[in-house]
Picture 1 (cartoon, rainbow, N blue to C red):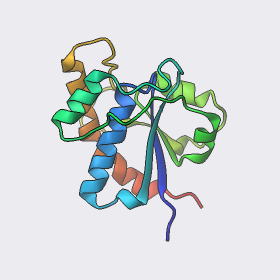
Picture 2 (picture 1 turned 30 degrees about the vertical axis):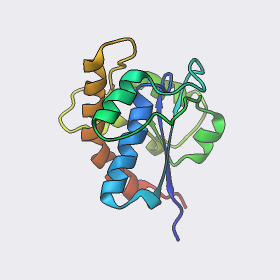
Picture 3 (picture 1 turned 180 degrees about the horizontal axis):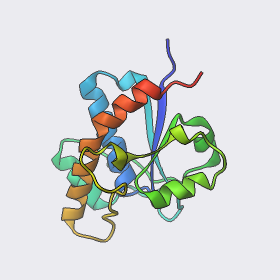
Length: 161
């Protein structure tokens, strides 16, 4: 049996964007019959919200789309994550830069989720923290559009020898 492809989604606090990305990825994997092929997690580049559940806006938008992310708890990205995950998927260029500060990693392992969003003219998923519900729906839409393309990429480039 081939080992699972390990992916961690990363934003700043791990309460808005990356928990949604984790939930959306798992939902897409279920629909594609690929869940057993992947290990999916999320983390933040800061420790500000460690141990907290996702932002109520993220929980609500996921719930409206039939996904429960309320069980997730925020955690900080650790060196072990950078060393062991096949893909580190950043929500924006700022967090990608913070991941790079952990040290050398193969560039093909560090991805920007928005680079898989068809027709996007930016690489950053906006941070909805502190905004209204429209911001969370926008994040959902971006991640939901990008996810099938990201999953396909990871399937083709995922397993390290």
